[in-house]
Amino acid sequence: MKKEIGKKGEEMAIDYLKKNGYEILDTNYQKREGEIDLIAYDPVSDEIVFIEVKTRRSQAYGYPEEAVDQDKVEKIMTVGRTWLEEKDKVDVFWRIDIIAIELNYTPPKIEQFKNITT
Image (cartoon, rainbow, N blue to C red; front, side, top):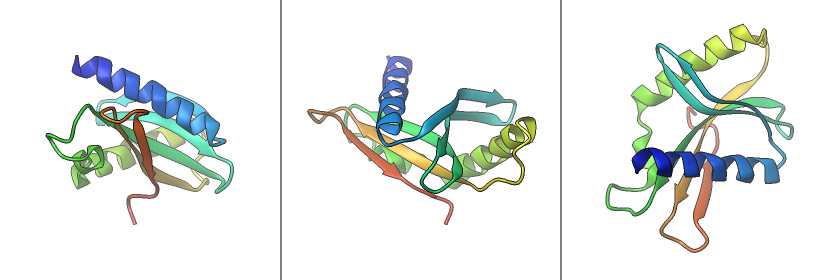
């Protein structure tokens, strides 16, 4: 059930990003150190964006964005640098965003928290 909710959230996040002009570059990029849910290009800021998608059915365990702690951010940074090296994009600007999705609203509530490392 948890995996299904996560998958649904990622699909909703992809739709949201595309509607907002982002280009999806990669999904579920995995390395030993961790995983990045979505990797996109933001043409407005000219940045590669590493995105953590958090989806919740309720606020029983807090807001979705609260589930991303400093340890998770550091893992995303490490895996993101590997992705940049593999794609020969080490000289580009990049950032980490969270897309928080709450399914207990109609329609579901989607929020994007940009550049969470600053």
